[in-house]
Image (cartoon, rainbow, N blue to C red; front, side, top):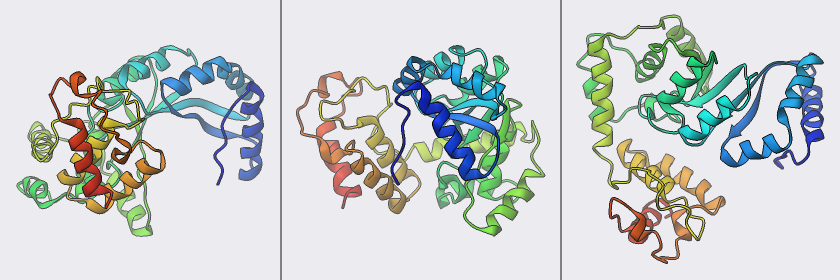
Length: 293
């Protein structure tokens, strides 16, 4: 399937009309500017996306205008502040990713501006739905035998700022399980002791990180286009969650986007920039040898 992109202002209206036609409806309740990052934000601003939103709302074609987000917190804050009529936003958040992308700071900031926040990746791509034994045994100390999924959902529901939790479901049984769990979720549904257990799970998993990358981004941009922190993150999470199949799948996508470790030319430009003193070229070779095989 060919991905369509907005290149001129009238494309907003054209694509919306195509979507309405395919959905066989005259309006869409929740309409997002998808996967905004710094580059896409600058682009839609230049195309005056706000005029499209105002026009589509006036015509009754959409009811609520929002955006989903994949970048760093300062960019998220800029987007929230850059348009006065956002109705909601969508961010990635789970108990392992509190400082990743918008993170908890983004959740709190959006809520302070009156924006309902929709949560995606509550299970971190399924990784939190089946914890490795080293993490599961921590939760087993609790008298409540909640599933890994319920622990992850309860952590999110604990925040009053969370409006909706989205979860990918691939079977009818997963749908039933999620509905049952959702009926038990309330704000403040975790005690201090339960929150400490989740924090212990997080620390335990993070202790298995092989590459001490803080994702500061000082090594970027790479002259060869490699997403250096991204490759290290995928590798570390593969080890943390003992999920080589999943890690290799993500790495294949990195290769398709030409940002994988395999594109490292060992130019060494990144070496003097890394505050952790990581031997990045040799580590790139390690990532590729284990995930690219």
